[in-house]
Structure formats: C-alpha cells, structure tokens
Image: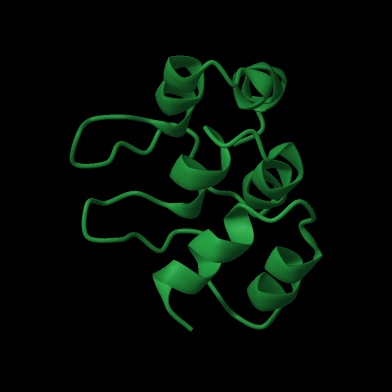
Amino acid sequence: MTFKLILFFSILLFSGGIKSILDNGMSVHLTNEDDSTSLHVSAPYGNLEATKTFVLRSAHLDKTNKDVFTPKLLDEFTGKIEFFRYSLRHKNRY
C-alpha cells in the first residue's frame, strides 16, 4: 500500500478502513514527498475520527513537514480546530 492510499482513508467519514490497514501493518509514520503524515491530512480536513485513530496509534502530534507545519498548525490555519482541541487533551499521553 502507498502513502496516497492512507491519505485517501484519512479523509473518509469513518475510520474503519484506516483501522483495518493499520491493523495489517501500515505505519502511521509514513510520509509523502513533503514529509507530511496522514495526521497532516486528517487534521485540517476536520476528520476527527481518523485523527483519533492516528493519535491512538502513536502518530507524532508535533511532526513538521518540509514547510514546517505541524498537524496542529494546519488545523488552526484551516479553521478546523477539532484536532487542536483533541490534541490539547491528549498531549501528555505521547
């Protein structure tokens, strides 16, 4: 499976597909050509269920991509603050 496939699942409304491919060995730490992870995609699109799945699988909340954006920063920038709120509640877990 490729990073593009995990990104596709990141923007689905339900995280069942994401859980399935993660259960089959896909890493939440995969990056694309600009060093973005699945969390960089799911957070700003406001897909909280997918985001929760990645966070619960130990995705790095403060990972920067080549543009020096973290998932939290992208979330704030797009006005989708669900991830930002969620990450504040869970920042000490990881």
